Length: 249
Image (cartoon, rainbow, N blue to C red; front, side, top):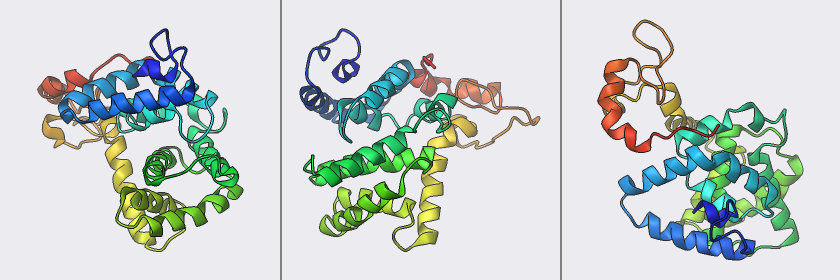
């Protein structure tokens, strides 16, 4: 999967971007038909070992859809990705965030009409952009890009009503406060963000039912996932060990 992003010496090294993206989506489609318990270790290992290289490849790519974007999009739910977004190198003080970069590329594609933006494209880009905005915030996103996208997002929301594309368009609109339901928007955003950040902030004890954000004595949670104590860390190991990889960052 990683080689289809043009990383390393694998099969995707000498292919053009369109071919890499096409082949990657075929492979992801095969993987996504397998049980989640078989998908998760693969996605977690990719995130732990290759995320810096994949994100750098994304920064060097063009357009809102490319192979690196497609691979990042399927690993954004992992705690490795959430942890990666908190690194100083990913903050706007260093360079534009990948959230601002993706929004700009999407807006440019709309302005220049360089991609078709069929329903599946809107769903994929919308999901990616909404997740990045939720984790990295709106800093660096220009008003010009928002003004370009908001009318289109409203159009896609109406046109693809009942489809995933409509839902994903609504998600970005809600983040920007461009549709009503402000209270609903805030509740939904907070819920999704808690879900994504939970593995880094709450004890992942048996069945993740503990929920403590500190040890019983008030100390910091234990690593590598977060645990309130050795007992819960040990109890969760049977499940956690399948998803546990030394991170490259």
